Amino acid sequence: MSEAIKGIARDTLDFIMEVSKSTYPNEFAGLLETKDGIITDVLILPGTESSEINAVLKLFMMPNISAVGSVHSHPSSIIRPSKADLRLFSKTGNHHIIVGHPFGPDNWKCFNGSGEEIRLEVLDVEIEDDEIL
Image 1 (cartoon, rainbow, N blue to C red):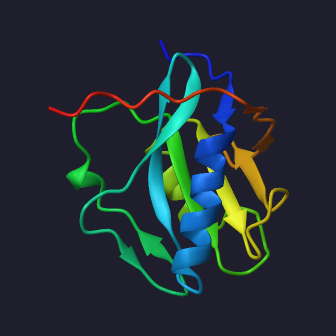
Image 2 (image 1 turned 60 degrees about the vertical axis):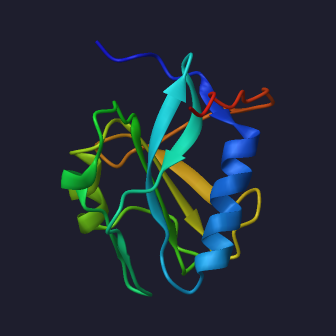
Image 3 (image 1 turned 90 degrees about the horizontal axis):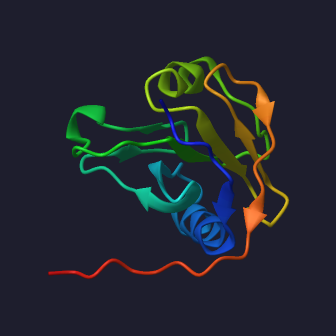
């Protein structure tokens, strides 16, 4: 049974926007993780390939974690899933964020595994860093 998603931490969404800006005009892609039902982490997989046309996640590089979905940028301002996006969605959870240029606070949407737009609340929460050993 999957955990109910309450929303995404504002700091995490801000991070996604900043990374998307910094990789522009190439796409950025990662996987989403939660803590207590809130999306707080973006996992960037080794070997991810990025271009102006797409970003390819090497899912076989995914560590033993439970991703709740994916995130990627569209260098265009078109914020809807492509056929390739839908294939990825079917393999990586049920909350998928697409952000579009110019990567402002309203330039993103969340979709379910079927590519239908869903509401995702942006939450002002403190994100605690896990202790690094």
